[in-house]
Image (cartoon, rainbow, N blue to C red):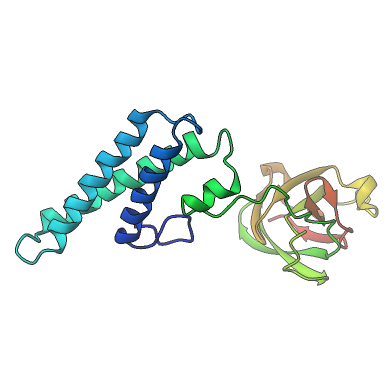
Length: 222
């Protein structure tokens, strides 16, 4: 059974009840929603098998390890069938809110909440991982780490050999970058970069919108 937050009920009895509601509603709406009778019949068959297997697995006289395994198998098949049914017939074309409510589903939000422009400022702290590798840790300098606008981090960097001029302007001088949603990541450098210095700066990104630069942070490449 599903253990994470989902549209499915968390109990087998709840899944059976939802399947029964779907069957009843879809039989009455199959012409309007363009659902073939054979698809509804398939869900009915899966539900009947799951209900029978649950009854056997719960009965003290018929409960065995095999019965328990068969019960799980039939519910896995029912849930897979329901997910496929939902994808095929409830999402395209989209149902009205009344249809979702009748099916025991939460109506979809057709007006996404704007996530905003990132305003937090972050920097990189580095630590040794292995030869030619540095671990990167995102550290918040300013702003709310839980701001929904903080979708991910664009880590910019430049490798500088001894004697070369280090970067001073991230916009102008940093030439390589990668995007990550993790607050800890690892970057691997080329063999010939050992002994050089990597200079990092980070911007929070959100669907093309960028936050302020963090400060430049140098690190010797092992």
